[in-house]
Length: 398
Image 1 (tube, rainbow, N blue to C red):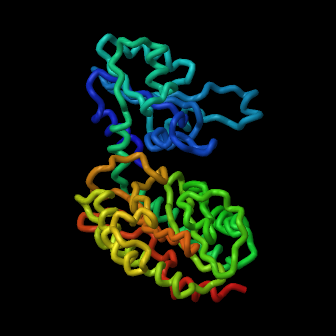
Image 2: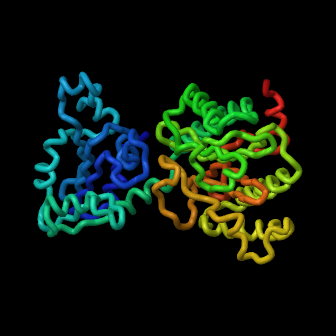
Image 3: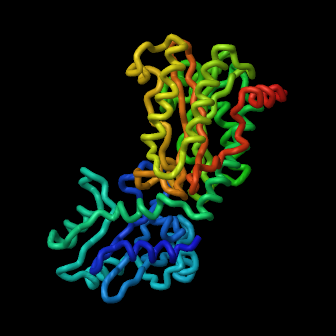
């Protein structure tokens, strides 16, 4: 990754006479305990907790990285920290300091006209903006740095796209392992374990999010998380899952028949969802918004739900479809991005679903799309979703 290029783009987007401070912590982003700050990692390639990144744009503009001081006794317990030369090589930053020098350095760079950028969450009393106000005072102009990072992270470069493709390929291997072992009588968490083992064995560096394995009536709950029910013959099971590769996420949903064969009613609903997904893939292009895509899907769903005699009025669609069809994807599953008109280089999900509790049918089918100059490219090609290929592959079970 060309981290120096990204760092220079941040400097170019900053106001004159300003500093931007980014800590390698996740004070307000949803994350597992071992996750680094994605924005910090995006700009440095470093995932060592508590390090600090400082941008200074003044008469002299530069970037400086602050790392842990060396404590050999602590390292016997927690492992070796980065050395300055390692930090330089990974981050492509030439100016390296130690964390205990940071605050005195920052004060040296500030003057009465300095603006201070931080990453901000609204209504967060523990944000870094408030930390600096308490530490440095209220005389400075504090700015929200979110927009700078959102702008940069919205458009993926070729290396980022390759990482997402790799994450999708690993996810495909995990789903195939699920299909080969799926059968009535297992617990949802047991079948989930087949995904876990396969993706770890094949190079995943983590999970995009906690796996959803929702069978039967559970499949009609959008964010079902217990994964404790027993798989029942004749039911469907909905998976929403993804491997991550070097922090880049796949986000895939698939719905399978537990016994290997769809019923005729399940097939009917499945085909409606699948054709809706194909419609969104054919429609996605620069200039549209994710809301535009969702409206296309809703207008497609309405007559099909009326034909199934599930609704009579279009307003009733929320009974069976109640989420958006797309969100941005990258280093986070719901990525830190600008949600405006789609541009080439953006990666979004394509995840139509129908949830019909009275039939115990919940179906969601999700792929990841790269927006191109004249349409989109499916980054999830090869992950089985056609009824015949799912049933054929499941017939190979031992």
